[in-house]
Image: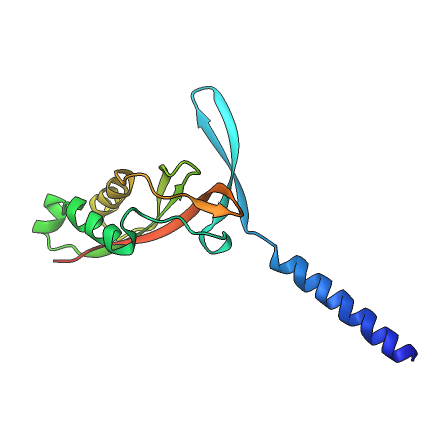
Length: 147
């Protein structure tokens, strides 16, 4: 009888830990500055929100936007430079894209700048959600440059 109660207690503790772990969200607090005002905002990681942010038109719309907006830098084109730029950005709770930065560059600064420009010109996304609340979500996107 004692071992049965011990088993039930251990199983109950394990389920409690599992339930608590399932609700863990990967959230980063970012400090933003605009003029003299410094504020902090919580940013969720893409895989840890209930509903991920979505580009208008979905993945197909995103690919079309990148292909129609991307302009191959002149020098890189003539020097036959190719590469892939891995960028991160935040889709804010209102759907605006901000905090664009290069995570892994292509090796050519002009390609890196062009990738950041393309992402910075994106229209508003549908915001990510945790429960019923719209939240800021960090996204990572590769921009390819191929000749």
